[in-house]
Image (cartoon, rainbow, N blue to C red; front, side):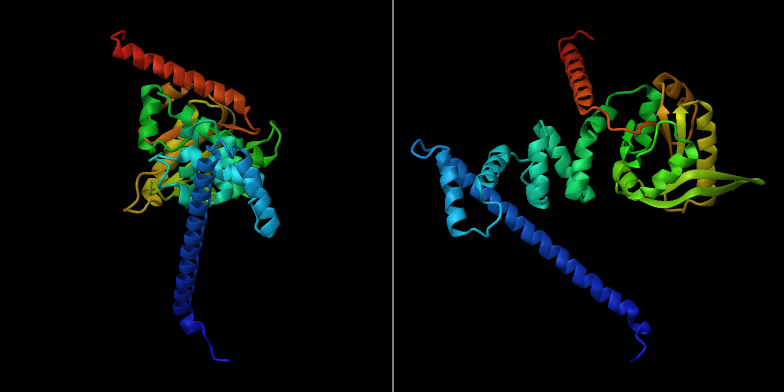
Length: 341
């Protein structure tokens, strides 16, 4: 057999063409499938308004499919009601129309059943598209209250924290849930780091799929001293290096000086000319926002301080906090409009 190595680059190009075609074909098939479910849902919805049929129409249609097309999956009574719900939920919604065909039907079903508001549904739709979430990944984000945690991270903060949020693209959460690590609350920082490395795929899902892992205990040299960054990533959207420092206790002001040193070393020795200044994330078990504000007020480097939880947060608690925040924001807004502030 002839040596094919000289042709490997050309062959890889052919593979890229094949994979790209397969991806386009999958998207087209999925688009047509979703449009079919939408059209069936619309037809069922209209027929169900007829007093002669009512809800019995869905059952009769399900019986018809069972008798004549027994191998056709998803056309039982429950499946047909879901198509009807799908149509009625999103009809005449201009924000949703461009999104629906970009999601799989299984992801649509999860969003419809688990989300309480249209804002939450649209949030997860956009997340599915941007992050290309599988069914399991979407379920994990919904179960961990990612929407609630994201929205609570958007609430106004003190000036220094707000400045840090702006310089880091406002993409980082105040709270990360690391339940997938399956570790005890008394874990050491070293073991926490190693556990994250073992569960790197889930960690990147939690912090965002735009992150690319570069290394653990990444060495930077300052003068005659070596320093080691716990976790180093690259963020494609921000076009910058992101250094994670892991702390098992409460945030302390001296952590800022250490992360500033790391970021300066990265910018001088590692960052490329076309990249943005490096960003630091201090991940702590807890934090006092007033202490964080004071610590960040003199910091020149873009740094965020976030908490982590090793267990799932009670979703009802997150929903209650978000409801209180929204109500407070609406009260403040009404007061401003009426000249009370």
